[in-house]
Length: 231
Image 1 (cartoon, rainbow, N blue to C red):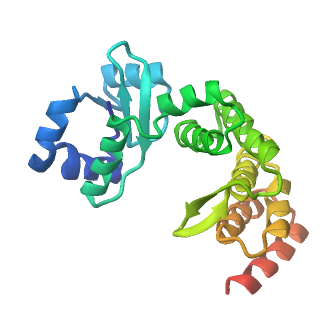
Image 2: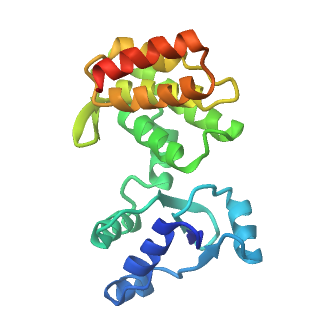
């Protein structure tokens, strides 16, 4: 299912470069029944609501019984790279379904827990209480399994970060985006990981917080520190 919003440029780009591209028609027709759920269309909105999809573009793969196999959120060229992602899902490599099955059998496997956390994080809105709880549960399991950050790494902006570091950053962004608008976990992340590749993004989230919710004194202090690090 191609979850599509006509007013969103990346949705149109995905359609033009991948779904409507003659180069990929044989691949798509041989492996899928493709349906576009168009936001704003009655039938499309029904499918958005039934599968609880928020972000567009989202491409979701469903089994014949309607169960969810995998999904990919967002799009950026080239389309060949996107096809590689879809083909990987088709082969059952690190899909939501395969990770969930492995997690059920081995809930202490740090790599599986981390990848499943990322997968769920991609799918669910941080502003949805149920979605946020699912994400937090898995990232907290990562921290419990690897509190010292020694059991695995992942890529972030072409650099390596530990599973633990990534989980703490994600928990911090969820706290900022919750109803409570709590900046403290992200502030703790800045102190703990002063050389992190994720540091700039942590500052950007906190900048949004202080622009909208911080006191004058707090905001002044934060932005002085921010500008000194990123002039």
